[in-house]
Length: 284
Image 1 (cartoon, rainbow, N blue to C red):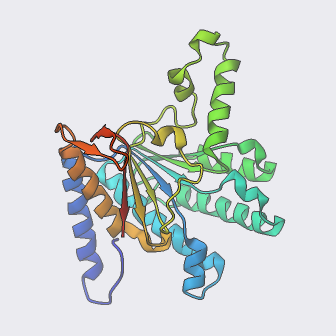
Image 2: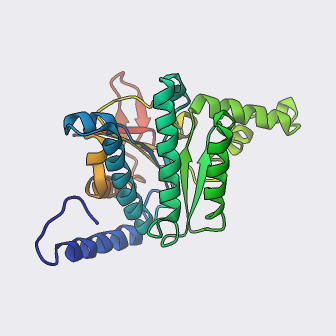
């Protein structure tokens, strides 16, 4: 279902039809991002803005995520990677950390058990990050939940929990060394293969909400690849929704269509860079 709602008879049916038509059109263009990363920022500010409890802000954020993922998978996106819990969050108060842990466990179960995501779209759910930091009860619950979708092959949802990009790169280097690689074989390719996302398609599009213009230690290796598009939205995550996601997909498809042209862009320092280089777009 697209953003908003109405009591007008047939409104939901009409929106569903529009969504399906849009998804089929984008999918047939062959210009769909295969891998999208999401920094879902703004749930707390949304709660304060609307004078509701913090947990209700997180609930609204989860609702937005569900609708956005549904649109992405229908449009042909192969992999979505969402930043659910940073390792840095462990610095918060114990009560807040416990609350975030309970919330994450609950939402992972919901995503897995709700057929519209896992079953309908054949989505394999993976929890990636330094899971050794999790309490055993949390870890066991996550393993049991994600086991339910391990045979799904149509698409992937990576839930980064707990995660930072620096830890991911350190983990990758340790993994390469532990694999018995000689010093000459420790290179960018071997490190990239050992990243948590090493088996996924390369990142095409990174989306961040809340008007914050930083990456917050998320997918730093992946986003440095040539051709990755970064979209910065000024809305809070619960306000993002499928309409803005559709707009991001349209812009990506348009740019992808003309990416083979030889146009060159000149940055602020006067350095010429090819149109396929990292592209950052702030969306109002």
